[in-house]
Length: 384
Image 1 (spheres, rainbow, N blue to C red):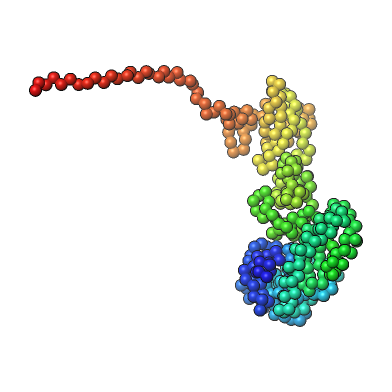
Image 2: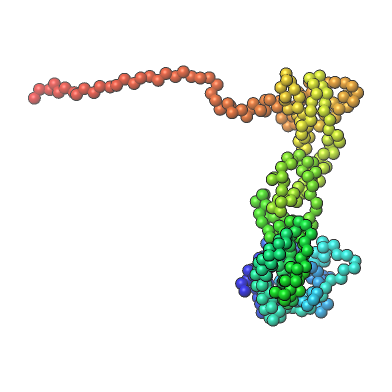
């Protein structure tokens, strides 16, 4: 078994089987945990609770009832139902307590126990269990396909003692997999647990590169999957294009919620209900907003030609108050943009015209015909 097979979702730097320790690389802040208190000698630090990670994104807090001396990277045997499981310690001390708060445990839930530091026999059985995961998943997909079940087996995780396996699957509708479990139990001779996950969880487990060019947030650091709606895109004045708003999981991107509070704070300066403006030139129809420049764009017909121009939000509020009083203002669009000169939408459009590189005047340059020069031989008039 190579060092890479010990990763279980986190890159390894070195593996010391004799001391049951795995040194990991700081690849992300979700699987491994950066200990920013390691250089601080805290005499009050606790050694009762430890965070243990397993395959991919599965983590849990375990209690050290035997008062074992453990450190980050140690391979330990922990309590499971039934039997025991093998995991890697990812956080200790005060950091483990912070991780426990992040997982939001309930009052009735009690942490399971850490039995011992993994022995050589434990690691050997764990290695055999890991080697069975890929062929088991492929065989399970074949059985599900033969039974014509509308489900997809996304991943398989064996317990450290090879007595149980967790099968993660995706299904759009309710699936009756009783016959599937019966056939799997007869073939694999293990206890089977089926866990249904969504498209976001599958993308989190598989990983990938997002349209921003970076690794997926759900794979690296994102724990909670908050609901994302198209209203988040509307509030940020984004076009409702499914191809641009959807992520690798074919759902709305989680990053649509990142900047939403800033937009909501800036939108407080805008009118709650946008309405058309009445001026002497005609009725101006609201088109869109520029949230951070505090501009509102309106379309108005001038000489039967639709023109889009911008107004500052304070000016819009003044015009709305005048319209409520029955006053129709005139020449409202000739304003100065913030931080710029007096311009109109037409001027801005013409400034980037394709003809700006053309010469202003045509020059009729006549090419002069070159006279052919005739070379005559020199006469030698000198007498010998």
